[in-house]
Image 1: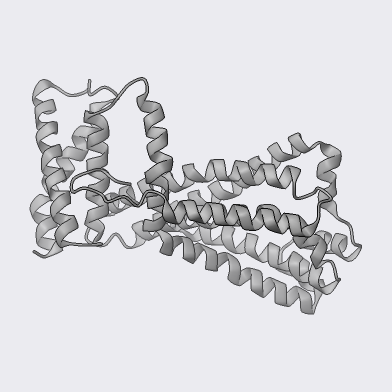
Image 2: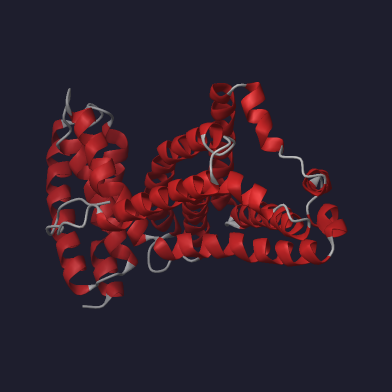
Length: 327
């Protein structure tokens, strides 16, 4: 069975199911009795189609589309009340989020490269000539001046109050991650800009720190929170790139259907980034600026990184039964 034949034969029923789900409302009250029966029939057919697609079409995009459609149908028909909210939260963190990360790792890797390559270029350029900092990133020359004078500006966090500073840091980090994600609707161009600019800024500051023998001070501040914070930026950036790619290259699906698939996975990733950024903000507010040994901060970095990627790569690997909604 070719993907084209399968999609052409079944697309009308999938689109009808999607339409009914859009109209159903929170309690299915938007559907008539006849439409409720039709919804149940179409849901069962879509679940069967998902099983066939998983068996015969492997990693084709239609599998992800049907997975999302069946998940929507399952959520509407078998919606629970009361403890259901807690169960959904557990399911989100125990299965949906880590699976979505593993399913979309190429996009996260692409975002990582779009950050690291400008960072390396900025490092090399500023190490060779610190005067280039302002030309590469407007305003960065002020930070380079602080570096040259040996000023540890992050110590102001302690002066302003750690709790307030941690809250401000969380807000700023969430804003960066959200911009990297939301930029995907502009064909991913703004996402690439956010990633490249932040990477270039880090590289410029790091290059100046290396040039003026300030590197130990800088990395002593960045190390503890950097692993989680940068990982979240890469994940959010990858989520944004998925949106842009779905618009540009929808494949055999319609552009709308491809965007729906990408948006559902991307939203899972972005929602998962929020608590991770809260953790990074707490570390940056309380541990990073503290006068602690560098070895201890590096241990925090290593421990947080191992814990994060053990969770993302190892949790939720149970077998998915045919027709069972996944991520």
